[in-house]
Amino acid sequence: MQDITIIGGGTAGWMAAAILSRYLAKHWRITLVESEEIGTVGVGEATIPQLQILHRALGIDEAEFLAFCNGTYKLGIDFVGWGDEDSRYIHAFGEIGRPLGLVPFHHYWLRGQRLGIAKPLTDYSLNASAAYADKFQHGVPASGAPLGGLSHAFHFDASRYGQFLRAYAEKRGVRRVEGRITQVTRDGESGDVAHVTLASGEQVGGHLFLDCSGFAGLLIEGALATGYEDWRHWLPCDRAIAVPCANAPDLTPYTRSTAREAGWQWRIPLQNRIGNGYVYCSAFTSDDAAQQTLLGNLDGGPLADPRPLRFTTGRRRKMWNHNVVALGLASGFLEPLESTSIHLVQSGVERLLKFLPQGAIRVADVDAFNAQAAFEFESVRDFLILHYKLNRRPEPFWRACAAMAVPDSVTAKLDLFAANGRITRLSEELFAEVGWLQVLLGQGLSPQGYHPLADQPSDGELAEFLKLLETAVSRQVAGMPDHAAAFARSAPTTMITTRA
Ligand SMILES: Cc1cc2nc3c(=O)[nH]c(=O)nc-3n(C[C@H](O)[C@H](O)[C@H](O)COP(=O)(O)OP(=O)(O)OC[C@H]3O[C@@H](n4cnc5c(N)ncnc54)[C@H](O)[C@@H]3O)c2cc1C
Image (cartoon, rainbow, N blue to C red; front, side, top):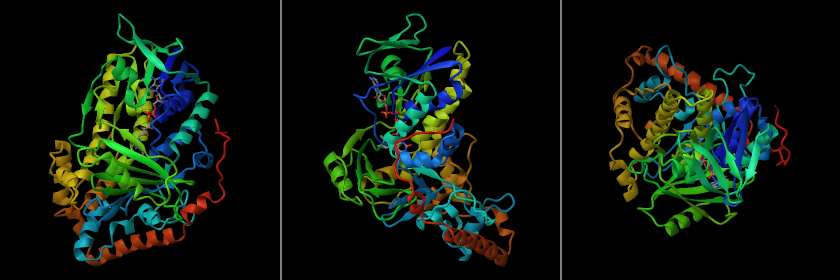
């Protein structure tokens, strides 16, 4: 038996505990240390579809999870005012249209636009059309619908999700230790972390430590001084203020992100409330003004005091250093514009399983882990930068974002798309071509040309192809039930009986 010790019991800590307990419980002892006195960050309620894969692997019953966590379905993110002040577009999950031969659908759509025969891109996306109609349907319809089913993620109550995962992990043998860590002790010879000491004097050791201690980075930074790459020159928002409010009558199956004077506001609909927050840049607005903006733009009355948060966008120079692997906020921070942080925890734990040490930790494994983790963070960073760089808003914050120099990797993507609508994606990049496409177009970048093979069908054939897809989408969406109907009979529960 070897010991894995998880430091921190937020979403990152309990997610790691749940996954590891599912796969490693036979040969590893898993302990999690957390402090109720310190608490968790208390935000992080929107996700991307990859979470479904994890839930399936863990055997989590979706209805049970949604009922316990007051969860709802999410089909994409609605961006309001991000191009110019009146613009609106959706980054919907799932496919758009259908490719013909080797050529992605959007090249035919671009040609159709020129000919004046193409409808808006959303009319060819099942997810976008269902989202804007407040519809949701689980799975692939039996009617032989040509476009398959919806691709969905979830919104949920962050604190309930932590409890849900905790119950799952404890049931599978994870030992929880309550207490505030006051000291981290390293081995004099190897420099590895040997044990942590709690305020009570209790010591907790381990062979491998997962630092899930949030922004504190108790082990990865506090003890190991790993260093941090600061990305604020590309993603300058550095504060947020969050507040839940009463529900609106409609239950929208998407997250909304509305651009504001010095940042953007999120709206995350749950079954019992709406989560809201304003992510902003402190150099361009004050905390008081940000709070007023947020409170002035809620769907219902606030249900708690606004909660301020501060952060520095960037990443640890190494996510794995000595015998410490950092996950969640301890590993770095990318603002929640595309709801990626919880996914980065998931993929971090999956990566750890891939490089799990057998006995001594090997440098080659650590280096490979760190290279992959850095690439993943950077590819998400680039996608976020794109939203800011291509804005056309007039306020000083937005003008500064439009003027900033961006990484070469972003410039290359913009140049490639601007010429012929091409999008490339390296294998480990998180966001698919169709994700980039919606944001590039939505932010107002229209390519000059399109793929030459999209000229092969005649004008009539192209019109027929586009009409066929548009009709298939609208028929399928018309037959879907309302999103709210999915929760009409699921009352919040306190029981957790997830399958093994
Ligand atoms: C404004 C904002 C909005 C966000 N929105 C989203 C979103 O929509 N989607 C998304 O995917 N992600 C989002 N995130 C990120 C998401 O909240 C986090 O990735 C996720 O909650 C994981 O946090 P964590 O577990 O790393 O840290 P935390 O929740 O802070 O947990 C840290 C844990 O460490 C413990 N701890 C710390 N110090 C000590 C100590 N000395 N002794 C003992 N225990 C200690 C704490 O008690 C706690 O249990 C958002 C983040 C912010 C800041």
